[in-house]
Image 1: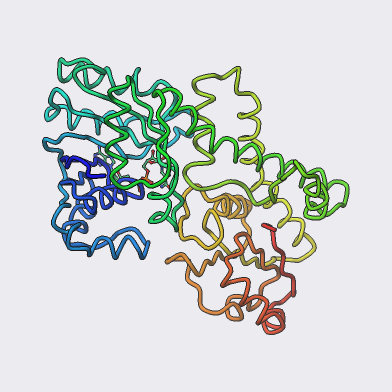
Image 2: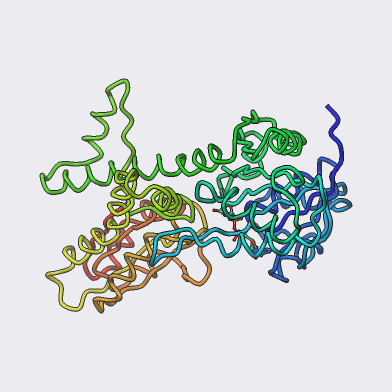
Length: 404
Ligand SMILES: NC(=O)c1ccc[n+]([C@@H]2O[C@H](COP(=O)([O-])OP(=O)(O)OC[C@H]3O[C@@H](n4cnc5c(N)ncnc54)[C@H](O)[C@@H]3O)[C@@H](O)[C@H]2O)c1
């Protein structure tokens, strides 16, 4: 099917905005990426990919994309405005910090014309489209939303590391404030999405997106709670979970060192913010998962308690294995606990620059404990292959895996 070509202004060209901008440019739309970060804008205009994904790098070099995509630091006129800026959690209040969304929307209001479509891809608390975004546009343009201007929430579900495939193949929620908004937004995504486009309203889309990550968080909390129960009883949580999962309708996840990344530990708070009383399980799960790094630090302390001036090596700093992303990483929380208590420790990660990593035998020299916090495949292979040499280099040959 041939889609009408549009001018699409993507505000925020990070992990979420840039891949979408590339896809729309490849599909033949004229795309302007807008970012307040000058380095990001320069990189896009020079055809340099600032996100570490090979297929996206290739797409960036595609002649059609080069022709259709440009970047700038301030918005301009367009047919469609897509907002993909950060929505962090305010750590003290556990509520969404919508400052980026508000300023992004304000920034393109002077260029919005009747009949334009605004799409919010950023993850937002329920009712943000109608209680925050629509009023800002109405105030600054004097037009009605929806009506004069269409507005939809189309949340993103991509997994960093596999963005290129997921952005195309994943099903997508298209939540318009009215039918016209939903239909217009669906057409924009139909130009590159092969997954199903599920048409709904803005509040349902906002809620569904948050519930996806909340579902994961609550299930991880259940696994972590089980691990704590097992520990007190001297049982092996992996065995217990394995047996329970033999039930045809049970699938308990594996316990870990906590929950990281900038989605799963954040999104549940956006539900609590809007419905504090009705989200008690969700809030408790969040607290359970936030507590896990403290428990891990406790286990490390106990592992070295009989050693005078113990030297500890922490391995893995990212929020999950085999990725480079350190955002909200529980491994950092473990390190912070040990630092607070004055332990002598070093923290290494082969995937993170600045966490210098030579060879594990070198790193292990004189250590009393190697605590594997994030078991990156490459690191675990090296640990296994060099086991004897690593233990020989240690003062006390003890290696513990805290994420199973
Ligand atoms: N990364 C993911 O895997 C993922 C998945 C699903 C949803 N999300 C959500 O998508 C949204 C964006 O996340 P991200 O990972 O792309 O963030 P990011 O930090 O990678 O990129 C956001 C970009 O927005 C820019 N920016 C901030 N304020 C701006 C403004 N006023 N005008 C123009 N640019 C501005 C920043 O400079 C940055 O380059 C968040 O709400 C996030 O929760 C992310």
